[in-house]
Image (tube, rainbow over all chains, first blue to last red; front, side, top):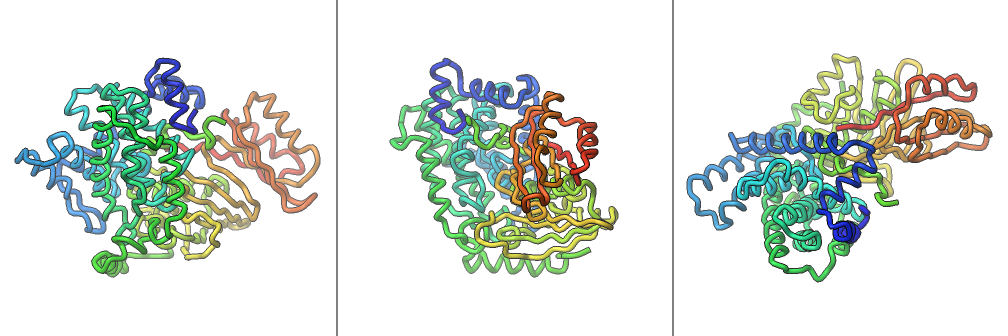
Length: 300
Length: 227
């Protein structure tokens, strides 16, 4: 059932159950653990997500490399003082939250990798912002996390979620797709609409390369989380309005896998291409290595 | 099979980990942890060879510190990971890093450990395959496939008829369900390696029992990796 989104949708429709229930039942069966234990584990993740968001918003996070300088806090302060963000109240706050988690991660703080650490900002940002805007309970967010996880398993079974193997599309693209599918369910959409949101969000992120400056999960990764949140919101609104992806979600995932397989190695987390290979990207990397060389030790 | 890689929801919504990279930090800690577990104790010395992206960008992601942290037994969410080099000195683990090219066919995030203690040495190759998930691919030259997503029994012994039956009969008696079973050997009648991934917990007494088989050289119980 976790090899295609279509089979998950069909199960949900035939049993007239929400996606999160189908996915939770699958996990109960495969793990042999109780519903309560699984929900408690997921609740702990939600709490870690919330803590990482709060930490990144409360004060400027400085990473070890110094490449990121508390942009989440800066942006959050700005949109709260002056409610003029073009992206609107809910999306702009989600963007700030996504950046907050990204910065905490780059500062070697504790986060929940969803599906990876580099893309960990997207899902907490989307779900916690929907909770703030629409008053969803923690119980409902835990349901949404099961849905997101089920979508993620399908992606890993058909493709992968590693930037080194599939580029940024596999990381922030997968995160946007997981968040979009679960947000549609949270907002009352049908399982089919969730699948369209997955397809629409991932379609808009196909081909995105992984090109981290100095090989660090900072530039452009933190801001890519912000972009992925915007793609997610776009897909959610479209899907809830009944807009459909002509290409089914499973085929979009397969396309992502083929694109990743053909992506030049320079664009797969090696820091040899894209933004990492620009004159400024190289200069930042050089400055970082020069500064850390004294600290770098190969042997004890 | 419905879920071909045996994935849990918590492989996707998780792990809870210290950043910055699930593949280069958390996955690296897990590779170190599994290597330690396969070795059976903390090694005294480790030569750690980094391939592909691990060599290219590993140090920027703290991969080096994460691998050492795993060898020391730290979990991926342990906030002492950034200080693992200093911790290794206190724990008596001598380590050295080297960049290597293990060939095109290797996953880009691959590490080759050469672990040793006073009287023994072991070589372990593994890859971090994304989202903190790992696969051990070679063990002392044997091709293997070990994910530590399951509790795992590792048995090294002589290649003799009846060995699989002797092992599985006992697993049956203990009501332990086998999820995956992998056998490899260097040559007929030579050395064989069995990797048994199980759904159920393997009691410590069973490990000791298998050690009493005259043709068995080593038995290890590798715990399922948690976050």
